[in-house]
Image 1 (cartoon, one colour):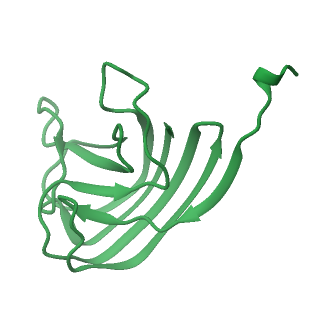
Image 2 (cartoon, one colour):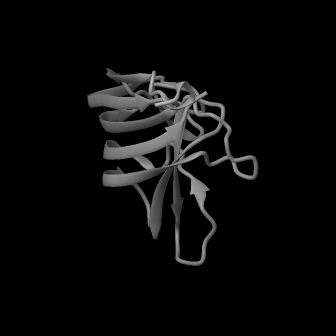
Length: 144
């Protein structure tokens, strides 16, 4: 193997994911929050379990923290990776579709939903996150 092709960066570990609304975490109470990741070079695969009993009193866009900053590798999009939503409970309201996206130049991902098949995607806020919110998510993204 040539030096340019040598795999010289492998890491795996855990972190504690944090739910926030508009960047604030006031009053959020967790039942479970677990995160595990594998990083090979700049590619990160992360698995999240997050369950709450109270969404607290903060307001704004819902975000969940990641173990690394998300790189801006796609110049035409702010969505910088992909995710598989394995389970979602305690998500309020009527929705047609829910997705999760790592957000460029941050250390978190956002939850999006559509209220009908023809609606635009909207970022979830505290009004979609019930006090029994529970989710499992697998994400992939490039880090800086």
